[in-house]
Length: 59
Length: 234
Image (cartoon, rainbow over all chains, first blue to last red; front, side, top):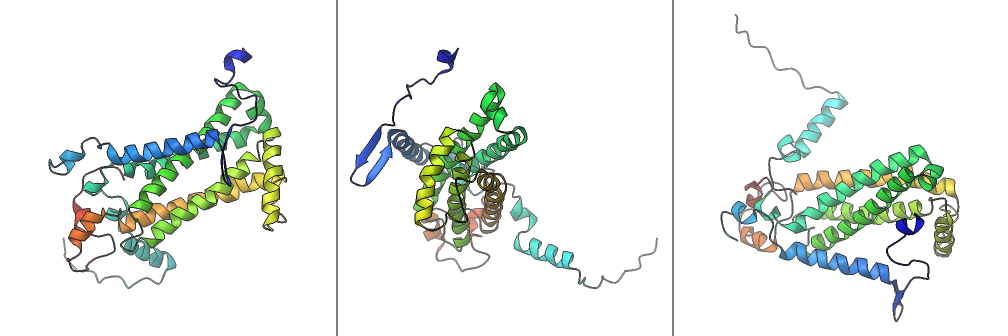
């Protein structure tokens, strides 16, 4: 049962990190930051449902 | 039926009446709970503020359950693990959507039009939420909490706050985590939302430029576009 409930990724090791000059980030944190950037861009670019109708038909 | 006109009542000196009158003057009911939002609010970037509030509600709800049951429950039972995970992941989501909200408001310069206090309360909420999360991580009652607290204490001692904010003191950290900092976050978020209601959602740059020649009438944020109600979420 323990193996079934275990993490999808093997976590039994020190964290992988990204190092650039004084910048020292875990890969997990870099992944979250990149996801936030992607979501931010999608929020700007994707049309909101029904937005065109609310603006009087202009897209 | 006689139609004898009664004289108007004398103005009350009661503090409750004064507070009510000030409150209604600052935030009339139709502005506090409007029927809709301006058309420009129909964009995904405006969703992240309310997503932050939704995450905060889940955080507080799951945190109340954890505080009722205690560390043995959240460490050694399946349902305790479940609520522990709900609490942790809702915090992750809270910071995720709050940062996207912050980025969106920064790039649209949301402090325009007399909205400085809206921006400041939001920024301070973010700053207060960080120690709220830290005190949670050091209150877990496990080796992870010990590791985080012994790492954090060096940083805090280096800036001289360790004497009155001791991350290795479970009782103090737990009090900060479940009482003091949540009260501060909820108070700040409440003020933030009320200020948004009072000032209105910041319009896009293009709209503000179109409205610029108009005479300055009405409260900040009370631009003509704000009257074009859509019913969209803020």
